[in-house]
Amino acid sequence: MKDEKYNGLGTLYYSNKCFFKGYFKDGEKDRGIETVPNGDEYTGIFKNNKFHGEGILENKRINYRYEGDFKAGIKEGVGTEKYKNGALYVGEFKKNMRNGRGKLSKLDGIFIKKKIF
Image 1 (cartoon, rainbow, N blue to C red):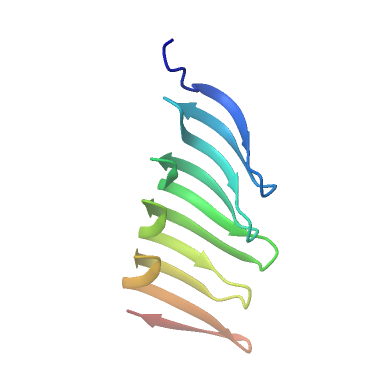
Image 2 (tube, rainbow, N blue to C red):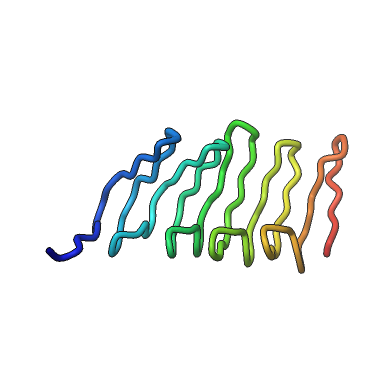
């Protein structure tokens, strides 16, 4: 019997009450929305079942949002990160960390401080 692989729209439920809803290609996640145990929700493109390409990683519980590039499941490339305290970083990321050129804006009373890396 030939191996059947999922293709097209579907939902994959995990035992930890998390799920992936989106499109499958050759049995792997291609693009869609995935929730994970810590409350994060990723919307975007996948490669080898990991976040890869353009996407949005958001956790509404802690008021955090990253919109930008991913590579093999981590923030890598250019993106925008918004934090609970109102701070905003726009710039480069490497290995899930702010790295390279970018601008960090922090709320300090009524003023916004900007730091260029």
